[in-house]
Image 1: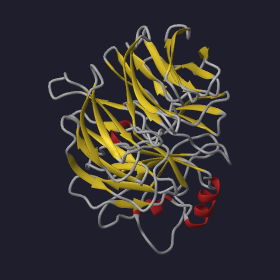
Image 2 (image 1 turned 180 degrees about the vertical axis):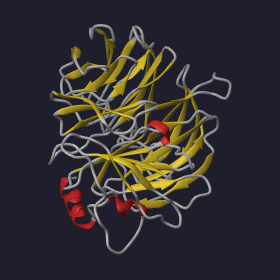
Image 3 (image 1 turned 90 degrees about the vertical axis):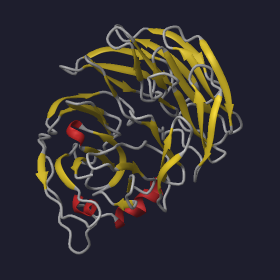
Image 4 (image 1 turned 30 degrees about the horizontal axis):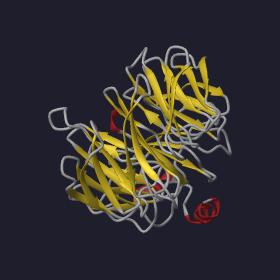
Length: 385
């Protein structure tokens, strides 16, 4: 991957202007200074997609920006496996903490920032950045999901194939459940049920457990060597939820949350990637991304395809974000570009100032784009999508 991305550093301009799809001369967009203050930069518009930078935040020189996480008021991210940073809605630094961490997305709770590490999970106080606890699992963890809010549990998968429940109050490990193989993507939760996937290359499957106890509720086999992390989509009336997984048979699968029974199977253009989970929507649809660098919006009730967006690249890390205020969805691609697509829209591929490492929906509907492995790494908050 490093070699492929290094070649693209030569191609990708060091200006966020490239995200607007313009040609000709390019000049760098202003970025944050050494203190981490946010700046505003304008972009020319394209005929199809009018993007503009609301603000940029730059890490210390030479640092890459990990996949961001956000809620309506703040943004959490890590940089170069060393720093965890909390930003406000305008990109100003609230605090930064130096600890060994992973560059996957943290999780935000009402009072904590939960950060995956190479050995477990780190909880930082959301107000101050002070360490609240460290949970040790002796393995590399993925982005956690939260059940029950304050006083509940963080549910986390590990690369060696463990699903664990961690008490949010003190970081104690409440339960551990083996999955049967490596799990490189996050779990998903709905109500009291947590679902995770695993894939050894020879055997793959989805496992559902009780999030309070870790007791297995069901397990189903999936075609191996290309299994995505799961998403859970609620039914139209809030019931009849469906687990959606993209598998190696080049299809998305809809499984009943209550018993794992397959409700539908929809062929799409690529197999799943474990670090690229589908993106559930409140209207009962789900954006299923696949290894061939595309997205498909599916109806979670029956698997019907509503629209598709394609690229000439691949997607292996970081799921999609959206929809933006104008109905676009964004997906980071293996070569560092971004795929943008949506209903009744022609797919558009853009080149950020450096190599896109992950995206998220930010406060106020902004698109957060993290870039890495270049000379101009930053977190860009983009409007107009």
